[in-house]
Image (cartoon, helix red, strand yellow):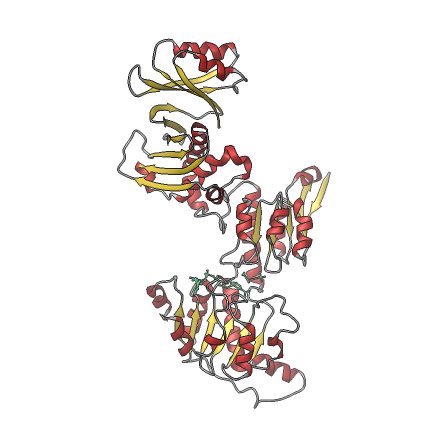
Length: 546
Ligand SMILES: NC(=O)c1ccc[n+]([C@@H]2O[C@H](COP(=O)([O-])OP(=O)(O)OC[C@H]3O[C@@H](n4cnc5c(N)ncnc54)[C@H](O)[C@@H]3O)[C@@H](O)[C@H]2O)c1
Ligand SMILES: O=C(O)[C@H](O)COP(=O)(O)O
């Protein structure tokens, strides 16, 4: 039987077992079509956080814009949630730390609406300069008033750009072409970058004092909240006009309304507000032609909505299919191109982390990740995250993933040390990875490498050289290197009907201490470990399940 779901023909049986995606804000149909290839898609907009919390439990993914608030309560209720996709830039309406703790990947579309937001900013600046909204309203209501709407030119005026990122840079470039002089404030960009755009990087106070127009393109952070307040407004010229198409809350709205009403600044154009929708009794609603208000329309162009819908829907689809997301805001450094290159190393790191947690046992206090030889030239952070994921697998099972491994480790008080040494040369062209765990059972270490075909080799366990591929079931022993031990272990396993796939002994000196590593086809039956430790010369035996 064929069911028709959002334009695609999917057999009903398959549809019923598909993951479910909730779309909680208006999203372009092209995004819904992409999601429908792999999921059941429900569109339910206008939900409050508590309404969302009530239904989110049945969904594997959530797609939203700025109209939905994803609180910690929503995330807690979203027990099946794997991904939250923000079809836009700002993720300040999502409790990202709560999502990270739960291992939920949060993605956005960092560039899909850049041009739309920049063009809206420029439209706001020109509308404010020429009183277009009020002149339009007056004319439409029957008037022909040319005297009240005399404007000013932007040509040769100074534009102060706060936040010279993607949107700020585009605004600056177009403003430059209109003959404006540019000042910029952004503590995270270089003077050279500002110069390329034609802007002079200055301190914030200089920008406030000298700019005729100030445009904000910063995220809302503890540093930027309330950036424009009564004190900073007092530094501006009485003709200065402010445009905010970034985030509400970076301007103190009461202070702005007071300054405009008192003629202390020239005016403002706002697209974003402290509380959205803008409160009915906001002091901003009472002001006249020197204040323009739009209802968060910066990203509302046909082109931008297609861009962000495709960008985010593709990422949700990929994550639901087990593939990486290309712009996850809470996975450090894991971009697809890097991921592709590092994939075999990530597998190695995760396997060694899992092995180490079982070799070491007990409570872990510190993990040292050593990248040696060629490996030291690779980007290390994803490798560290993969090692932590492996290390925590025994404790957290599927609850740990690339999103939350770092935070879970930190919450358990595990210190992470990373070292790299390109000068170490061994038999492995791709270099070696060594993991050292320090904890309640002292210090333990494992080392591994990749063969030319990408196959993993465990090359050292607690300073004993070995050369074994990892396998699902493994048996490790510590013993005295003496005749007869290997045979006894072999026949003991045989008597319990356990098949040995491979066996390796690692020793540093003849007849000294040694390790034995066995790869087994079957899990070890209960009781066999006790029998193994009774064998003369065996000091320790433990199983590892990878
Ligand atoms: N109105 C809308 O519909 C709309 C649409 C898109 C984006 N936005 C918002 O616009 C803002 C900018 O977006 P973007 O894509 O250009 O982001 P971006 O990350 O490219 O740029 C932000 C810039 O702000 C700078 N910055 C950070 N903290 C700062 C501080 N304390 N002081 C000065 N500069 C600081 C950063 O260095 C960066 O260069 C974001 O808040 C985004 O959410 C709004
Ligand atoms: O951060 C963003 O991308 C903008 O604020 C756009 O928000 P919207 O998707 O709700 O229009």
